[in-house]
Length: 174
Image 1 (cartoon, rainbow, N blue to C red):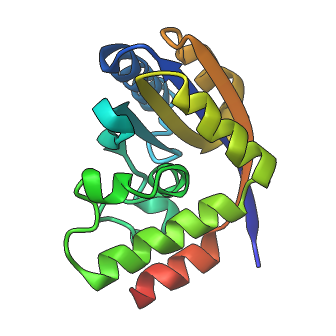
Image 2 (image 1 turned 180 degrees about the vertical axis):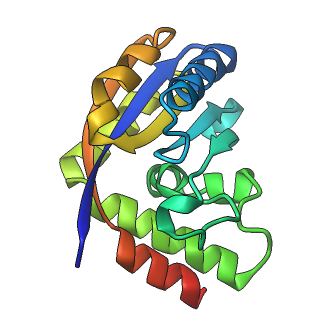
């Protein structure tokens, strides 16, 4: 069992445009560093009534051998772990049992990779804004990612551990 250590960054925003600006800054950071396949990101928006929708995402297909090439990764899994209804609101389940199983698996891996306290704090932090940005990146990019979140009114950083081999195996089964 090979456990990889990542960092999850949660930016809290007053509006989606600011979250999307930081999303683009993180994307540019990874493009310029030639590490475009070393992060996942998801912009979430809180709608009236408290519903959360994933409005933009970048998922790293190569990190798990191309198995998740359909565009689902740890950032989306973390959003689903924090806000289960986002899978439906974001149109991510796609009406398939396999799609739902894969999302459930990724949410489980993301949730298992953080302490309960960190998950609770992450959810509460995202509750403070109308938009959020979740970025899961490799540990050696931690300071650079955090610095790119310039528009956030609050940024939380949490360690996330994931067993990439287990994720790949479960994705193949789905």
